[in-house]
Image (cartoon, rainbow, N blue to C red; front, side):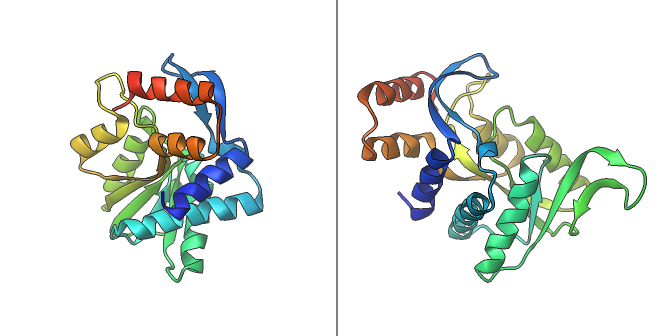
Length: 212
């Protein structure tokens, strides 16, 4: 397991962004785990989280020159990752979108730096993929291209068409996804951390039933 992956999972457990139990998802599935980066809401937590993203993006070798954060969770992520990259010697601009166009002041749907030619979208997870596809359309409408989607966790889970949202994004849009961690990493980390057998069995069973 890569250091940035382990650091992310340790951070998620510390801030209870990763919890185990019984959770009803939007899809109606009952999941034995829940992942919500919104609980990481302190300066030190955000600094560590952004570093995990920045290290994973750098390790990917993806060529990019701009970051984009979809409203709302993607906004602080894009800003934090840009700061972490600057600390690592790479200064790039970041842009984010509004939910609704503003008709006064600077106006428009996009805020921040001008989009680069090759944009990385930063988000927490991808579920149905609706928000990400909207971001892709906005970026392309402004003459830029999406180099990759950068997320914290790949749930490795099938959607309604038997593909994961990540598979669908790659096949339909030609866009790769870079994940700091995967469900398999969660299972490995839980084993290494000595989680109880009941929890591990539930997560493995969920992976077996719904996983790609």
